[in-house]
Image (cartoon, rainbow, N blue to C red):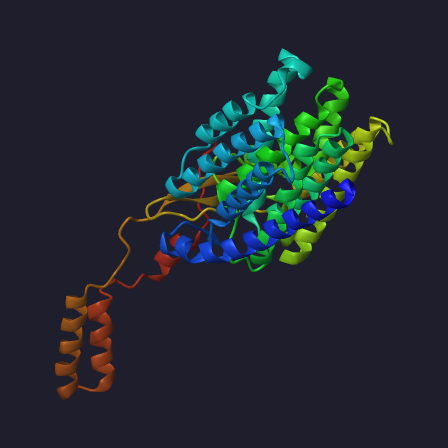
Length: 418
C-alpha cells in the first residue's frame, strides 16, 4: 500500500506541474510582449517570461506537496529550492533591467555557498563545488539562445540527476527534480520551434542551479576525482557550449561579454541542420552523457567512462570551432576601408587604409529643382538633346577627364618599401 500511495502521489504531482506550467506560460506571453521583455531571434520577438512559469509552478507544487505531507522534501532539498528561487528572481531582474553578468555570477555563487554540504565535502572541495555550481549555472543560460534546447537538455539532465539522488535514497531532491522535469516538459509545448516564449535568465538560471546543486548533494561523500568526472558527465552539453563560446570569441578577438550566433545550436544550423534537428542532436548528446554519468555514479562502469565523455565533448568543440559564425563587420560612415596595394618591386601585397568621406555626394533638392526648371525653359526653344545636355551639366558639374588622366588613374598604385 505505501508503494502504491507513493506512485499515485508522484503521478498527481507530475501531472499538476506539467499542466500548470503549460497554462501559465501561455498566459505570460501577452504581458511579456506588452512590457517588451523579449529577445530577438531571427528578426522575431520572443517573450522571456517563460522561466517565471517554471519557477512558480516548481516552487508552489513542491512546497504544497511538502506541506501536505504527500512528498516531503526534507531540509536539504528545502534549502536548495529556496536558493534556486532566489537565483531565479535575480535572473528575472536581469531580464527586465539587464543586469551585468558579474552580478549574476556573484549572486549565484553566494546562493551556492548556502547549499553545499561542507561537512561531507570538506572546505576545499566545497569551495570548488561552489565555483562549479556558479559557472555551470551560467552555462545553462547560454542554452536558451535557441528554440527548445534549454528545455530539452534540462529535462534529460533532471531525470539523470534525479536517478542519482534516488540511488542515494535522497527522496526530497529526487522528487524536486521530477517536478522540475514535468514543468520543463510543459514549457516545451510553447518553446518548440518556432518558439512562442523562452525561459530567459530567470528560468535558465533556476534550472541550472537546481540541477547542479542537486548533483553536488548526490555526489557528496565520494572522492573528489570521481565526483568531478560524474558531475562533468551529467552536465556535458552546457559545459561544452560554454567552452566553445569562450574559445571562439577569444580566438576571434571579440569581447567575451558580447553575444553572437556562436553557440552549439547556431553552429549546427550553419552545418545544414534544421532547428528541430539541432535540438534532437543536442538532446541525444545530453542523453548519452547523462547515462554514462548515472552508470559511473552507481558503479556500473569505471571512472574512465567520464574521460570518454570529456574526450567526445572536446572533439565536438574542436570540430565546431571550424564553423564560421562571425560575419564581416559593418563599416561606419567615415571608417577606414582596407584595400590591397601592391608593393613596388615585389609581388607581395600590402594593405593601405582608404578613408571614406564623411559626407556622401548627395544632390540638394534645391539644385535639382533649379536644374529641372532650367531644362524645362531651355527645352521650349531648343531641341531635346540640348535640354538633356544642360540637365546633365547642371546636376553633374564635373569636368570630363582626358585620356592622359584616365591612364594615370588606371595605373597601379605603388608605395615605397619600409
